[in-house]
Length: 417
Image (cartoon, rainbow, N blue to C red):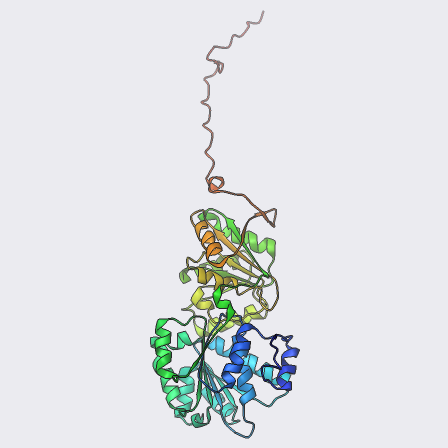
């Protein structure tokens, strides 16, 4: 039987709220996560970005909120401020559309502490934010941790890394033993599994979304353009000028090249912004806000810098540098063509890099079409490595001495009579 949100045990109000967002059919991870979380047991969920994982845990949290309890009943921890902001926006939108009185407070380190304290006095049932600031407010007794029934670790693999794990453990220890712990991640490797075992109960449930087997939406077209290394940026400009994308994400492997690429795009009249791991939080937020609201057409990013982003209306993904890891290609391409929309993933490659295209086709079963930009249009191409080699210039003929024919004979001039 095909699953729908009613059969998953959600209230009519929540289902109606989803309809207002044009969400009527649950994704694979939602059909598995929602009933798992409703059991009250600890849950480990593995699912790609863009698969609907945020609603997969927000919906059961909303369903389980006790209106008679004044205080924080759920804490959602995220590794980045922008991911926290995304979750906060989705929670507020869901509450508004469903017509339910479920408040959500955004608690992150860059915001004013006093304003956050004032927000917590309103006793919001849900708190989402960064681990450090939330832990600080728990210690200040501004968040009543003993009332918390559920803790969510969104992008849990990053939260369980060395730099974050101790703070995550500290937050968990402030809550009661019978609270529920939910961990979600795009990948759950050996170290993540080991640390998850340290903080979760033995009967924890494991849920895996279908997208992890390499599935990508069939609404995404995969292309590659063969070009010489020195011509890559010029080809990028041609693609952007010809395709005129509503929103395009351009990926580079080396974060150090992002700022230069952004500057060059802006110099040529293409509105661009960049994000990468080392960029400042305020600059990062400005870049993302400009991209979401359409003030910027192109967002240049690294894999780490783009991790956790959920921007639904990206039409094009362009790999200026191609990733050697097939999984990274899947993550990049999956940022367009979401929610049933069409998307276009274009990789600008050198003859040497073309081998990775073949690897993606083999690993993920994808079909790539070779293209080229001709008169401003993306057209089929059969260009090869030989076509990219510079043409050898023809040797110039040596100039002949005056009065000597090309054959070597002297000109005979008639004397005037």
